[in-house]
Length: 68
Image (tube, rainbow, N blue to C red; front, side, top):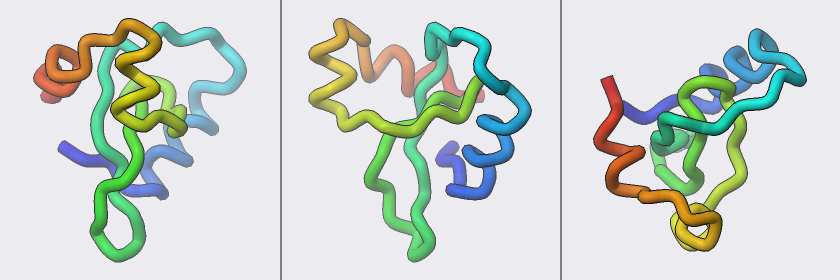
């Protein structure tokens, strides 16, 4: 399940400044349907490339496979 840019924006607005461990990562769908960034499906933060997630010690495939 990829999230649209509008969906991640709504998640960010609803989540606010609370800390998040980003337990569920998904792809973010851009305006033309392309998938370029990863986003947290809990708080809506968008900023990661796959390489950045791996540098942070995240198990990308495990996080992506947690999609509902």
